[in-house]
Length: 337
Image (tube, rainbow, N blue to C red; front, side, top):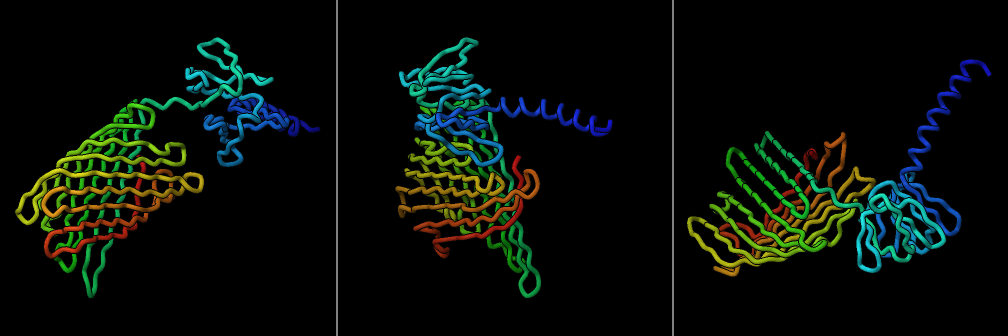
């Protein structure tokens, strides 16, 4: 073997020595049938262990078929006796799993592992900014502009959600849409997935003779699904609404329903979302107001994505001279930050 080949083998040996321990430290499951599954152990739930390997999407195996778990991150581990400990999975065997709790080893039966998940980070924030524009000239001159911003901020057990929609439509120099819609919601996660909170939307659209509509409400809700790929939450509540249509002001009690759904597809580069809110006004003509936003996002460069969305608004008792429904198909570009 010449010196060049020896040097190459030495470099490969060093790289292998560095990479192999790093891969092994990510985590592994030792199975009763002798298999060893390497990958990041993400959680234990409903009698299953979930693992996310480098070579495939996340999958699960039955906890009853696992001999031992090794993982280098800290979990909140729920035991069958109702207690919870913060621990690492370090080794195990013969139906026993060793947990490292505050630097001390703790032996538990594998069957006593009721659940485990990584602690929620104290602070999380996800924000989007979407811009949709259409300009036509010729026989008909039109301008359609839609800007949508949203943000979700979580600090411990407190979650803040904000949305801002600005829409301007113009045809042959005449404005056909001037909608401004802002919505803020607060959630206090007081018991696992359950939360109490408040919501405060504001809307104006002078083209529809809506001078303003604002509402303040109290809600109770539940996160139905919250994992790395799916988020689904729904809430019910009551509130107080004041609106002014064509110079006439009315106000009263309002029933509230909200749903928010997000689903990552195709390894996270492609995602689906659907949000809707239903407010039923127990005053005047008992107007029911439904607003929906459904669409897809596809990552094209880093945190920049293309977006396609369908917005559909419906009112049972709209202002005189206006339609019950209003739909918008928007195609544009956005960014996550």
